[in-house]
Length: 309
Image (cartoon, rainbow, N blue to C red; front, side, top):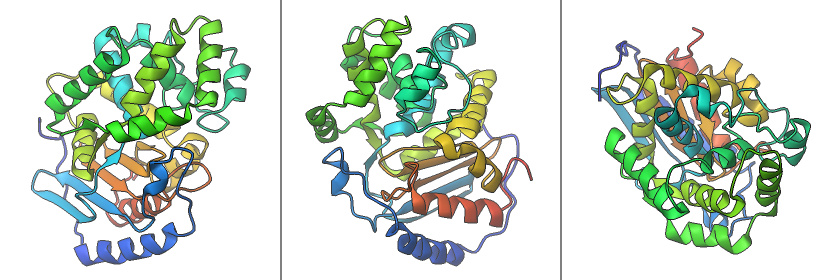
């Protein structure tokens, strides 16, 4: 991993983070644990882990840092990065747009308004469209190739959570199937079943906060195997679209490219510096981790990490 272009020079008392974690756990009880996927509903609302990697000699973690979790939608920026590296910008953005969504992450209405062209890669319609273009003859091969690529480049140890995948498959997902049908009718998807199977598998890639921070560093710092232009594109879309319809408000409050997942995973990238990863499964009404966003806001303000500072 190449060194970042800027050194982190902030001062920070780790006891502050411990106090914020305690406050965040209390706040998490105001959220909800999603249960539309049975295995997601088994998560404990008190689980909370956070890891900061702000310089090679400045790494801090606290909480249930050994607790693995599925990435769910946090994988979406890395699917985009993978395909940008594989196909290039012009091709990828013929499949998906760059505009923030006005509706929720799984909105059928948004896709209909846009006549079947997915608004951005961070919502379900866009990610399903991109999943349909990952190279490989089936979902298993596609997911394994993406996982291997990310682990090789980042040093993470992502793995496919087979139990979560079985849980996802057990409930089907008529909303995502409807999105896929609209995409196919509009000419942006060839095989509905292949795209959905690929999407389900990549969303069930799992790891710890350490693994998630390592992924974040791929977007934060120059890497000899990733084009800087592609990193900039992914970071820009995380900033404008990564927290769904709440993205604008949190761009003001946090000021970092950030992506959430319904598992409670949350990743923020500090371009040129490092990354912050959080895991807390209780969600707000937009599907973002309540405790994670609370901690990110405290950390970015205390350490003046916003890219707009």
